[in-house]
Length: 226
Image (cartoon, rainbow, N blue to C red; front, top):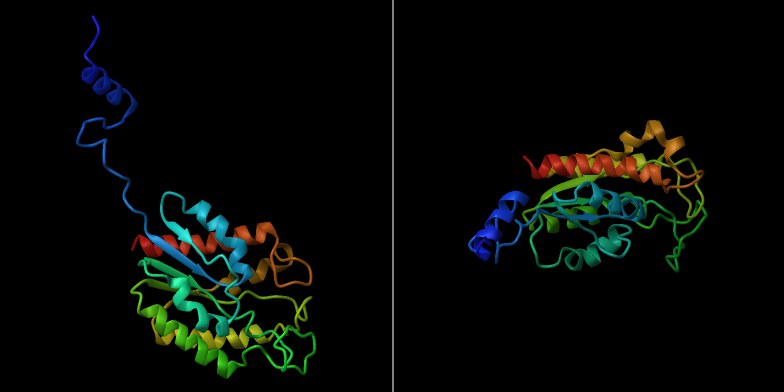
């Protein structure tokens, strides 16, 4: 004897673990995941796809399509990057572009040590404060990532390895003053730098990006679950 269609569907739902009742199946969507925004330069562009994978089903991770570069661009674009929807967590970093040297006339990357930084320490501090104040208005949980280390005088724009310490020091003071969590990627990756980073470069191998993604994911998870 054939079962009525409703009874058949009910039994099928029981067997498959699905709620097929008219009130529980139709018209209901999965709970919204916490929205996470990642802001940063090409280092973050390397680890963001892996963070998205690691947080699949736990958070909705996004980042701007473009490279967020340094604080000068950050001040200009921060409103655009934030958009109008609320964020649960914003993980951000600025530094590696600020400390590189640029042509004083054109602003184009320079390999000359006598040319100025894109943003000197004073300007970096002022710009970062402006960005932080804007981020605080979102009500999101904020996490600042320290800029990652690199060998002295890597390929590309002129960068001294010691400069990243000074820029991170300025950033730390701002974050501590504003009670913002710090993700110390600098210290985390430093012991493994020779194996995780590309030779004579500021960028990382795929395994380096995965390593950084693990550190980023860990702190984001602890933030959204607290």
